[in-house]
Image (cartoon, rainbow, N blue to C red; front, side, top):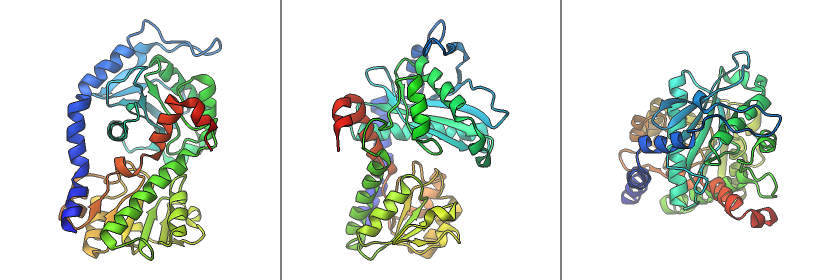
Length: 362
C-alpha cells in the first residue's frame, strides 16, 4: 500500500520535470507570446469595437501578462493572461477565465502562472492539441464580485484575445458562467464553453473526478461503497461529483462556504463546521485553489483519517510544505489534479478540433 501511495504521490513532480524539458522554460514561452503581441496596433473585433494597442500589455512575470481593463469604480483591480507553453493559432493555449479576489497583486500573478502551468500538464498528458493558459481577473473582494460589470470584463478579455491572434482560447471557470461566455463569443471567436452543444463540460470534469476517486478507493480501501467521501465545494462541478458518488453507494459529506449549496439529496451537509473536521476516508476538493493549508494538512495528518486526496481543484495545496505535511510520509495518496480533473479540457479539444461532431454529440 505504501509503495502505491508513494508512486502516485510522486506523479505530479515527475510529470512537471518531464514537461519542463518538453515545453521549454517560462522565459521562452513569454518570448513566443511577445512575438504574438508584436503589433503596431491592436486588432479590431468588429466595426463597433475600439482597438487595443498591444503596447498596453504589461509583462508582470516570466509567463504572465497584465491586460488593460475598463474602469469599474475600483471593484475590479486587474486582469492577467498566463501562458506556460509556446502557443500559436495552430496550437493555441487553453484555460478558463477565473474571477476571484486575492490579497495582493503578487498573489494573483502567482496563481495565474501556476494555473497556466497546471493546464500545460493536463493538455500534455492527454495530448489535447493545446498548450496551457489561464485568465485571472482580480476583484477587490469576493463580496464585490456580483457588482462587477461582466460585460465590461468580457469586452476587455475579447480585446486581449483578438490581440493574441487566436493563440489563446478561454471558457468558464470560477465566478464566470455560460451567459458570460455567450457574450464573449459575440465579441470574439476564441471561446470554448460547449455553447452550441448538449454536452456539459462541468459534468465531463465531474465524471473524471469520480472515476479517479472510485478507482483510488478500490486500490487503497478495497472498494468505494460505504466509504466516506468529503466533497469540499459544491459549485458547478462539486454538485455533480456529490450526486454521482452518492448514486454509486458512497457515504458523501458536502461542505461549502455557502451552506445552502451543500444541501444535496443523499448527502450530509457538514458546512456548519470547518471542513477538515468532517470525518472522511477520501477528500475530494472541488473549490478554490490552496484550500489545504499547512494547518489543515497538519490536522488531517494528526487525525489519521484521510487516506486519499483526489478532486477537481487546481492546485489544492496552499504550499509545498502543506503537501509534504500530508503526503510526505507515503501513507496518504494524492492523485494530482492534472490527472483527475481533465474532463473539460478533453471536451474543449473535441469542440475545437472536431467542432461538427462535438455539436452533434448526445
